[in-house]
Length: 452
Image (tube, rainbow, N blue to C red; front, top):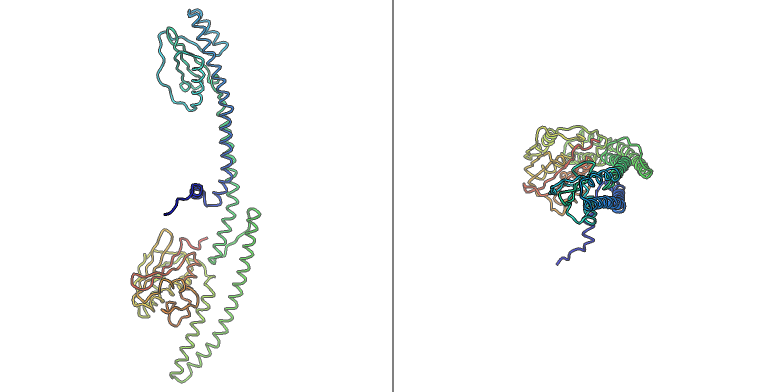
């Protein structure tokens, strides 16, 4: 029986799922969240300790004036005394007082934005007045309407809103909001500038890993510039190593091909015979091995990226497979295009298709455009490979018992070269069981690969 996790662990799991994954989002959260919490706390303290206190004093004052006027009118309800009360209330209390003879209290009130104001006014009136009353703080923009049931009708009071609550409180909230937005905007600008430097460094590293040489200049914060300078130095060392290796391979290729050419010439002039034919085959195998070694070491890294019509390239590759006796079927949209190094991609596909043609009688090649990029499948009906040996088949110079790496005369580099080319374009090559009964090799190339 699986015990439930304690609630703190479950809570932090939920929080981690909600936290942004990008550096920009997390940096912004680190800056904006404390500011927002501080603003909320300040606003709460302001409303609770100051605004509410001021409003309570104001509503108590208004309720006291209303109670005094009602008591004065109750002592002498004559019209002359009422007129005197109205004049004095207007002059000294800034209140408009009128008696609605035979009137009744209204029913219901308009909804208000600040419920606390109505709550404070109701509490003050209930503590000072014993008779039924009604008030409305939303009907007039600058006034409050208070009506109280009296003998003979309803006494109506019209008071300015600043007699009821602090009308300048919204200005404080406005300034607080503007300050928050301003600080957030400044934080976004600074964080975005720093994150952009990291993004450019990541893009340069990704492009360099795919063999694309891009101009890159360190910028940003000191730590980011330090990492960028380390990357530039590493890039220079790797490039120098690649150049030295290319020069060495070119020299080795020249040195090995010269004696091979002499051997081929001598064998061509020799008397035909079984031994001569065997020697010719050995020389041909040596030449093929040299080509394989050089192609694997070179990696086609210096080739420019172009827009390639994939069906045309597949048809060209499959013609070679058909010549070895395999029945090859190609299925692809004629307009399907990819951004790739043409020769490198052709060599990788040729390795996959020829590998399938040598070990099977039927070969099915298909290409399809997917939301993630382009997928190319190469299926055969050959003996296949056990699933536990799929990854081992990609290791350089490894030949499995079923000999699925290029062909019988190969050196175990066909699948290794195909995967290296795919990864150089930002993609991948994987193996699985084929619906034809043999092996399926799948090459995935991402969208706009290398277009940086």
